[in-house]
Length: 313
Image (cartoon, rainbow, N blue to C red):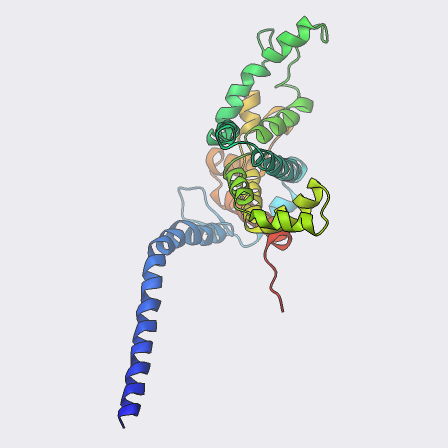
């Protein structure tokens, strides 16, 4: 009888402890969940609903069904001819390019002394703290179309060109300048995460690998460094994808006109902002945002497949 009572009391205590731990865990998560649900989930849901309406911010939304999406893909030549392909090209160049440079620089910095590593890391990270549009304003001085622009000044003095080049008004140059500015500011938090991941890899793994016959630094990178920091690689990839697809205003700021000459460098977010805040067609702008969300999720899925942890059976 006494044993049964003790067993029953033990089970009750275990259930009480589990219940208390369960409730406490959710209380810790609750503040973030409320903020995330209110400012992300709810807004995405509202945007998705508005994408099926015509809404001019004044009158009540008018339900139009799939008309916005049909118009977007069949009648909006600016979106299909400029915004969508330019955004994908920009993302494919800036995303993998900046991502690879971030990893390479993080790996190089991990090989040097702490003091020098800290100084160089701050220098490399600093441009990412500046908004892309503000960075474009700074680079306008370099690519200015008169003789006072730094690039024109040096090219004229070297005799490479005979007259100032209108770098920011020529549609054939704007996109390339955007890529340059984007890569310059691409080493953000993902770069720091990669640096942290490399520095926290167990050094015994490298020693054991060399004992087992590893002969080069390339083998070290591909067989130990990258597999040991997949969470940081995934984190950096997700940030790179979100950052590149969220870019906007670079071409307009560089050229000084909206839209830029011949829609060079015109991105999806630029197109969305144009319809949402210039033409006040919020329903159509919401449809563009939903398409953009789908594209970002698709690329994030690819990144997860590449760097996510696979379950072992």
